[in-house]
Every structure is written in structure tokens, then in C-alpha cells.
Image (cartoon, rainbow, N blue to C red; front, top):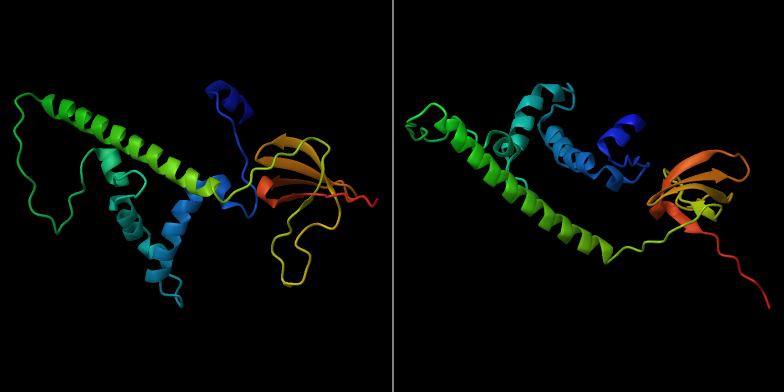
Amino acid sequence: MEAMAKLVGYNHTYPTTYHPQSNGMIERFNATFIPRIAKVQDRENNNWDGFLASVVFAYNTGTHSTTGYSPYQLLFGREPRLPTDQPASTFTFRKPNDYYEQLKKNMKIIHRNARENMINKQKQYKSRYDTQRNDPHYSLNDRVLIRKHGLKNKLDAKYSATPQIVIREDHPVYIVQDESTQVETRVHVNDIRPICITRSN
């Protein structure tokens, strides 16, 4: 993966636990897909796999709020034809290659519009998210505490009892090491809290 990253020129960011924003595209798909499966399956027979094709088709033919188009339309350059639709209009092309040229034009327009819609939506999401978000940065050897997830008791401490040392930084993801056990943990910046030292006069 490191060799591929150097060849293609991308920065491989690893997701962290309990932080779905790290893998937003997949998590957003799951948030839409799983509830649909849950509604149609028979919970006693656990036959959710029998509905996969129909649920996936519904997802692929539905218009997405981010792109303004359905995945089907982005792939094929036209709306899907369903059994309930009116018969398709008839077009006559003078040359065999005319259909291909028309399809390329349609795809170019659709992809350009979808890209613009995505950029505008991302700006809206970022602006809304940034208004409610602090963005602290940490340096190597900083002593911090990290959030504990999966607590069973509401009265349990929400952060680690042992200080953690920042040993690697790739903001917003950090690698920290427990001072006592030397265990390393990958953690998102939202789950880190600085250790405040108070001095008495």
C-alpha cells in the first residue's frame, strides 16, 4: 500500500475506532443501506440476503442529495427504465457512431454537474461542521488523555487514567503510547484531551 501511495500520489489515512467521519463514504452508505434491509427482512428467519438485490437496485436508482443524480444515471448516462415506465421514445441516428457520441456528451454534462453539486454540498457540510468544532493540534511527546469507548457504567471515567504520549502525528489522527504499558493506540483528535497542569502560588 505504501508503494501504491507513492506511485499514485495519495495520502493514505487510517480510520480510527468510534469515529465514522474517518471513513465517511462507507459509513454514509451503511447508514442508508442497513435500515432498508432491517425493514424488509423477516427477523425470525433472518432472510435479509434474499432482499439484497432489490434494496441495492432501489439505492442505485434513487437520486442522491449530494450529486443530484442516481448512481445508475452517473454510470449509464440515462435514467433507468422500469416496468412501470411509459415506452421509451424512439430515436433514429444517421450513423452507427452517433449514439456513442451523444452518450459521451450526456455523460460529460452529467459528471460535470454532479461534480459541481458535490463540491457545493461539501462546502456546506464543512461550514456547518466547523462552526461547532474545535481543531486542537498536538506535538510529539505531548502528554494527553484519550477517550474510553464502550463504557457499561455511566459513572466510569470517560478518559484513560494513565497519561499517553504522542509518538506520531498525522493530524487529525495521532498515535499515542501508554506511559505504563507502552501499548500504542491510534486515536482521532476528537478523542484526545490535553493534560492540564495547575500550579499553586
